[in-house]
Image (cartoon, rainbow, N blue to C red; front, side, top):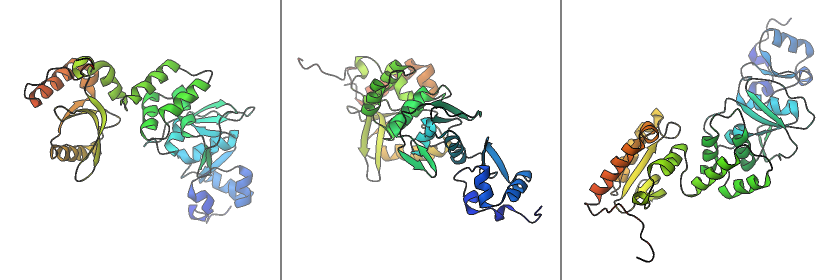
Length: 313
C-alpha cells in the first residue's frame, strides 16, 4: 500500500469536482490498486452505486447531478436544472432527473427520478446534460418532492428562464400534469404582475375591489443611480408598496439595500410602504387599512377610493 498517497496526488479530473466516475474509469486514471487504496482511506467514495468521486466533492449538487444522469442515461430537470440555468439562487435539496426508459433508477434521499424519452437536452452544466427552462419549470411544478413549486416557478418566470406563453403552450401539449388548474392560475397571476408567492396573496386577498383597482404591479422606475421595479405602485399618490416576503426580501444581507432603495426612491418623490410577510398572510385587513390611510394622506384627501374610471363616465 502506498503510504505516501495524499489528496494532492489525485488527478485534476478528480480534484476539479465537476463529475463522477465509474470504477473502471478511475482504474484507467490511476490503477485498480490505487483506487482501492483511495477508497479504503475515504479519499474516494460512492456517490451512487457504481459512481465514485473525490470525497471532497461527493456531496455537491454538481457531482450528484452528474452521477444520477450518468447512471441512468438521464437528463437533469426540475429545480436542479433551474439552478443550473441561474433561475434559482440556492441549490435544491432534491435533484430531479428524467431517466432513460428501461434503466434502473438508483435510490438516494436526495434524488427524485422518473422515466421518459420526451425530455431533450438543452445544454451542459459542466459534464451534466440538462433540460431547457420551460421543461425544467414544468417538471419542478410536478415534482412530488418539491415543497416550494410555486416559488420556483415564479422565480423561473421572473428570471426569464421561461415565459408564461411558453409554459402555457407546454402545459396544453402535456396530457397529464399535477394540479394543472393551479399552474394555469399562477401563469394568469404572473401576467398581471404577481411575481412572487406573497404578491399573489396580495393580488387575490389583500388589494381587492374597486378602491385598489388602480394599483400598478411591477412598475419600473429609474433614479439617478439605478433602476428599480416596484412590487405595487400607486401613480396617483406616487406611493410604492413593497411586500417583504421570506424568500425574496427578508434576508439579512438585503436590509442595507432596502434602506438605500427607499431613500433613493424618496429622492424622486416616491414614498415606500413595506408590508411584512406575516401581516399580509395573517392580517390582510390591517394591510388594507395601512395602505388606505397612506394613500388618503398622500392624496391630500382627494383620494376617492376609486382608481379606475369607466369609459362611459
